[in-house]
Length: 300
Image 1 (cartoon, rainbow, N blue to C red):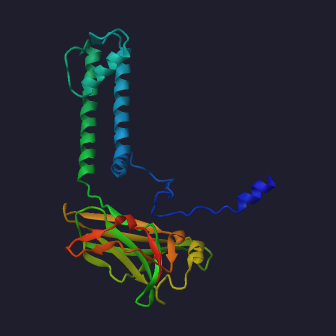
Image 2 (cartoon, rainbow, N blue to C red):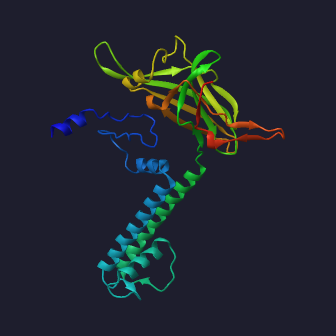
Image 3 (cartoon, rainbow, N blue to C red):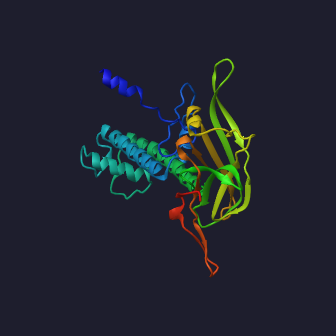
C-alpha cells in the first residue's frame, strides 16, 4: 500500500484545456438552468454528423416501438395484422408516422384511429425537426483549417518569435483572413486568489487578404511581450495555454467562418524551424507538401 501511494503521488495531472483537442478535457457545467428542447437542438447542431444521425435513428425507432406497444395494448386495433404480433404493429406504426399507407394494414375502431391521429402529429413534428437539423447542418459554414501540431519559439530577423503554422485544407480561398493570439495563464492576486488571466499577443501580421496556401503566424517576444523570460517549465507551472483564433470569409459561400486551436507547454518547441513545404517549380506550378506540414527541423 505504501509503495502504491508513493507512486501515485508523483503522477502529474493532465492539463485542462479551454480549447480542447483530441485529448482535451470536457467542460461540465453544474448548477445552471437548461432550456430543454432548445438546448438539445443547439447541441445537435454542434454534434458530428455521425452522432446526430445515430441519435435521430434511435429516436425514430423508439417512437415506433412505443406506438407499436400502444396498438397492441388495445387488442384488435389493426385489421389484417397477426394477433399479438409486435412486428406487424411496429411496421404499421412506421407506415403511419411516415404517412405511407399501403392499405394492407389499417386501423380498426375509434381508439386505434385516435392513436393514428396522434402518431401522425408526432410524425409531422419529427419530420420538421429532422428537416430543419439537416438543412442547418448543410448550410452552416465550417472551416477546415489545419494547424501545426507544435508551435515554436525561434529567431526571426535576429529576434525571438513565437510561431505557428496554419493552412486552408480546402481548395477554395478564405478572404480577409484575420488571426488573434491569446495567452492564458493562472495568476494569484495579492489576496491569494487564483485567477485565470488573458493577455493578447500582438502579431507581426494580423491579417492577410487571401488564405489559399499556408500562413505562419508570428508574435515577437520582446520586453513588452507577456511571454518574455518564460520557458517551458514556467509555462507549465502557470498552466499556460496559447490560443489561436482565425476568422475570414469563405470565398465560395460568402459567409464568415471561424477556427481555433491551442498550445500548451508540452507543445512548444524552442530553437527549431518549420520544414519547408512550398516548392515553386519552373513551369509556374506551386507544390504544397502537406505530408511535411507538421515536421520541424533544427535551426541552421
